[in-house]
Image 1 (cartoon, one colour):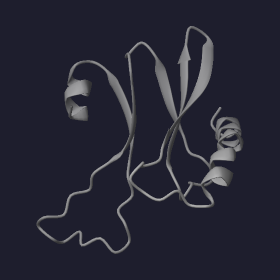
Image 2 (image 1 turned 90 degrees about the horizontal axis):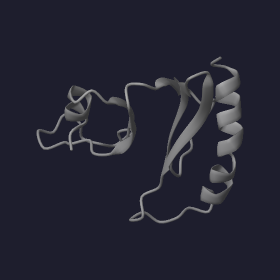
Image 3 (image 1 turned 90 degrees about the vertical axis):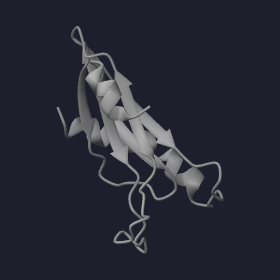
Image 4 (image 1 turned 45 degrees about the vertical axis):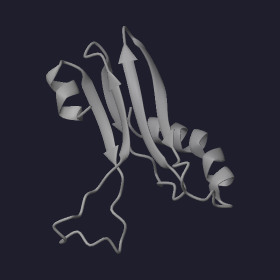
Amino acid sequence: MPLRRLRAGGLQVVERARPVPPKAKVDDIHFRDYGGVALITSSALRLTVLTPPLQPNTFELLCVRIAVGGKACIIAVVYRSGSEKVLASFPEELGTVHVIIFYADRHHR
């Protein structure tokens, strides 16, 4: 479902599009940039996108602080394509997600 339809339906959508590969032929008429991650919520929640101090290379990451009724939490949306080879650095990068979230939260309050 297109994200614009979800927004039109009154939902909040926070997204991080998949970066375009450096050698992509973006001037080609057939170029399409597919993918990315998104968080879709009720409009009753307050969302703040957190910018991590670094972006992993082996998976996609979207960090969002969600607040409602004086309470808050952080959600990390992590995606690694199952069709791509698992790189040796993946477990190490995944292990740093909690550090990335802690840092991002401390610098966005």
